[in-house]
Every structure is written in structure tokens, then in C-alpha cells.
Image (cartoon, helix red, strand yellow):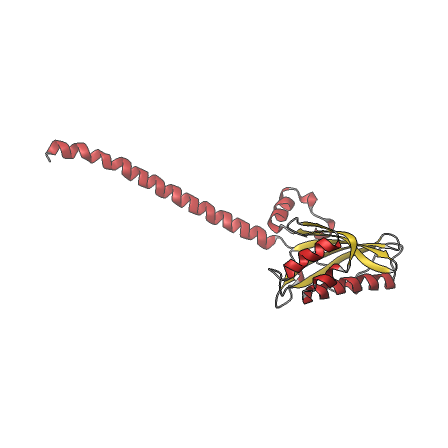
Length: 216
């Protein structure tokens, strides 16, 4: 190889060197942004605090509505206690028996069961599958009686294994609609919503007026 050939080849190394530099800068930028985004997410998650935690003892809730009585509160709470006990045993038949024949049941992932038989068989599969051995934790927010034979219960809740979850760690918000038929309370509808704490925190920061009164 002569001197002319060496000189002709030399400049070709510079574009490669520049490309490497650009690639390193871009990689460093991506890593920095990733760390910043991760840190921001963790901050939002950490500061998404719930103040309205409710109470784990159903019978200590002060019910509202003209038909609210100590007896009706006791009956409603007994039904919900039976529901929790049936879940803990993994007893799908006992669990389903606490719902009306035409009950609706919407899980936190959006699965919608229609009718007692449907939700019973669905929970039979759940209790024998990935929810096997779990228990229910509830923290009651409100119990309202709409007439003598209808009640709406809202709560925070979650499933757990081992040690019961703390109230602040309950990740779902639940609504039960109860009816009394032939003197017996049953669940006519259940809706379960997963709390998206980071998205909730962002919405409160962007639009503070969206924050519920009890969370201010």
C-alpha cells in the first residue's frame, strides 16, 4: 500500500467516530430520561395517598336513609360477613347463594357475569385457579338504605394471602347493591373498580377540583 492509498483511507474513520459519539449521547439521553421518568412515577405513586379509608368493622358504619335501623344494618353486615367467609373457604356455591338469581357481577378487569349460576361457576374456576387460598379484606365507606328493602354499600377492598392488607393498601373500590326479598337480604349487583393511583394523582394535580371532598 502506498502513501496515497493510506491518506485516502484515513478520513473514512471520522464519520464512524462521529456516529459512535452520537449513539453514546443518545443512549445517555435515553437512560437519563428513563431514570427521570421512573423517579417521577415513583414520586406520583408514593404521594397518591388516600385519606378516606373507611372502617374494617361493618357494624360501626353509621348508615343513612330513613329506613336505616340497627337491625337492618346488622342484617346487611351479616350478609357481607358471610360473603367474606365463603370466599375464604373457596366455596363457590355458598358464595353464589348470597346473590339474587338474576344478579350482575362486574370484576375489576371488566369481566361481566349475569345471573347467579354464571357468577358461581366463574368463581368456582377462580377459587380453583389463581385466586385459590386467597381471602377478602374490606374497609367500608358508606351504607345507604333506599327504602326498607334496598341498600347500597361502598367499600375499599382487595384479596390477600397470609397477613391481612392494611386499609391504605386496598387497591379496589367496590359497590354492592343489596335487596331484601321474602325477608332475606341478597346482592343484586356488584361492581369492582381497580384504583389507578398514579393516574388519579396526575388528574388531581392537573385538575384539583376533581379531588373528592373527603380527599381534600
